[in-house]
Image (cartoon, rainbow, N blue to C red; front, side):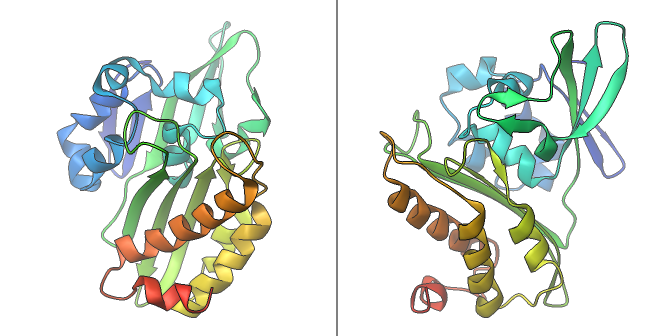
Length: 240
């Protein structure tokens, strides 16, 4: 269905016509994402959240689309439906080809978004920097989904907006951290990999150097937010 939210086992499926407000109000998803409303409050205004759909956000293909970055970090798949009723599944991280160009034919639409729900071992965070805290387009935004077992990162997914011509899933950074110890050294090394994966441009929202600095700070912020007893800003800045 193009509308609605379904949870079966550890898989959540969301119709592409579902609005941001419907996600906001979904009781069960708020248990899996305890800070969901805090994150979604950074997305536009209540009036727009009431109307804006996830499919629309994806095909708008903005390099700084908040919900696109959100679902990229969840390593989501999308189901695409054509006019003959045939469906195909594609990883969202493979959907975008170049600026405002994506893998969707004229007779196709996005039907659903699907992702694995967070577990006790996994942690999700969304960060955004804009000139205004609310009701503004991001200068840089980012989401992270990190699983940790016995002090080791077992799985990591990072996405950034505003730092590349497309919404950027950080393949190399995510892969680099898999199997690494959750330590400042590993995170600082991963930040270097991250900087090689982004290519921000200077525009009205800031210079390329400024956006690189924002990306660095948001990358560190994910770990400070998700693991506050383990990391402070000093752990990173004194070495950065």
